[in-house]
Length: 379
Image (cartoon, rainbow, N blue to C red; front, side, top):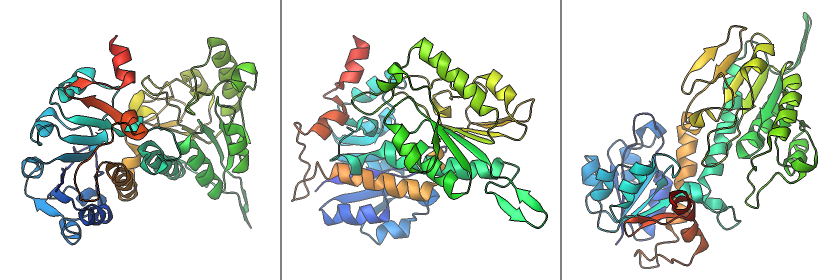
């Protein structure tokens, strides 16, 4: 029988790696699930809800981890936690493979099999396991809700006997999963929505949601997407032209939401301090890239600031974690779909090392980092 451990995350991480629903399915598949007491309380999953589905509640993290075969986590666990598992155990989490290389190597030295959910392949088969998409979707939604709350005026147009309230103008920068959800949410709230992205395929998606697409559509723009669907790094010339377009557009915007991230690199600056100075007093910028430094030059990660000209810049970290009930539910389902690849019909751990999803997410094995993205950077 496979023993799966789940512990409480750090104070700044309210999400949890299993839900009562996924516990029920893991137990039904023949696994034992051991959860640290209180691990799910910040996501409104209390101990009794877990025990009702067959989980065992451990008094401490050490009790939950002791000799377990699998550790399911949201964030990168500590080396000490992994060392408490069974020899060669499986660890599945968002390991932040591009952050703190030394700590990741120390984790690999435990000889645990480390799987990073951020490396999930962008394939149809892997969609149910795509944690970046599930969490970004919620972040895009919550960013608009927070922007509407921070904005000192109504979002939709309102016609009243006392006069007309104009609709707010919202500009979404970066049209990935978070950006698309932000567009849809802003449209539902009644904003006039525009959006920009360097990937040509996003233009039709933006228009299909009823928003207007804003970008420099030259030859470089037509080739600005990787085979995996990510944005390519653009040339200095293109960035200059795009910045000029954005600078003119952003002056009239009430709400701006930035979502641009390139895996393994600091977030690109999309909004300069000079651009912010041209914006209207009371305008709001929500920077979803704050964890990687931010897309706005004024962003202070983890803080909300008000500039001299009255623009509010919100650098909230872990946006998905601000809606932990939904975020944990979706993340837990992502992990369930993934871990099911490793459990056979008898409830035993059996890993197919030829599986493209297993290969794509494997970060470390037998004491060494093995993912191509990590071995390249070391050479």
